[in-house]
Length: 222
Length: 221
Image (cartoon, rainbow over all chains, first blue to last red; front, side, top):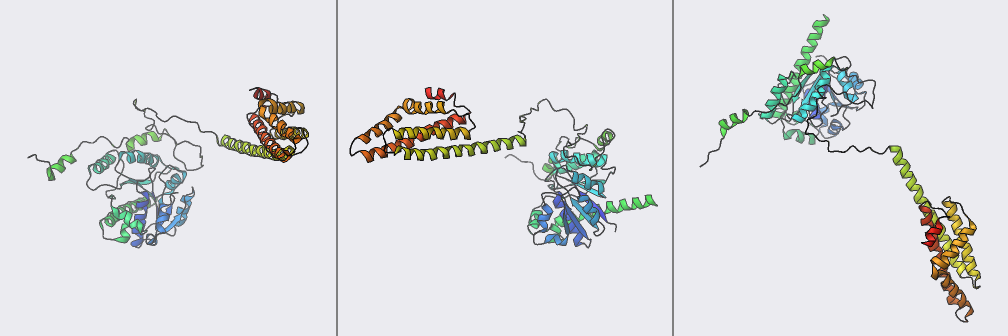
């Protein structure tokens, strides 16, 4: 399994970046993958979370909200299979630098026009390239209400507009906040629960994309 | 009885709800603008750089959008610091001025207790002139002794008519047998009070940036 840097980024605050980053890291850690998170968000959400009882299931957390966060990621990716960068919810040089070194970018978005509008600014950067690179990215719907019309509407509109969206999504559930009280994620509290299954589905999709990218790279180099 | 839509039929109707567009830009439009704008580069860092607006971002503002928040130019930081420093210096100077007046008011109390008729009035006048000289030095105002002495006498006798009268009366009581101690006390208290009054007048006068020359106007007022 190749090592990869996965950045969770959008310039809209409150979209669920830190929740998604922590959930994916904890999921991979539980499943025997060596995961690390770089908390590049000055709000220190992940750093605060890991200070609680369950300490995010032993996920290594590096706190680096400087513009050199990407260097920390490059350093850690040799030791950890999955290095996830949690970026701040606003435009920053640190985020741009992290996008420039990422193998894959997850762009969480709430099914709301306010969030979609701001997320499009992030996608604009990704599509037009950062430091000469155009990282592979996927949007992921977060905090959705199950079977809601607005979530379906936004999903279909994003797809129609040519923005790739993960099939899996994070439904709005109280278990995320409850798990955070323990310093954990739904996967750490109840591995077979609905929230944990959703996280697993997102993680599987991400892994499949990363694997296919590696295969494409190998084929291109061969 | 009125029937409500519910169950499967209701949900189907809900799902058919026509919603306006949520995604206002497409990936192709973004790619189209890629050639026009430079790529994002994280370095070198320019903190003053404003985010580059894409052509899609530059779409015209709707006519019904009114800018409600007035643009207030914030005062430069150095101006604020200078202003705060100036306020602090002015407050310190005023405290020093009040201390000078208090000191001379105490000396005036002693001067007023001199049991020699008329000599105590001369002593108090001299003390007040010295007090005003100290205040002039503190406020960096040119000091003119003759003009100041005239102003002090004028204040005691004209602006504060009871001042000179009280001092004169208490001085005259020295000549009355048995009233010596009482007159001493009265003279001491009134001298101190008038020193304070004149001192305060001069402080207010200098605080507004006036000089001794135009102090005459205040006296006349």
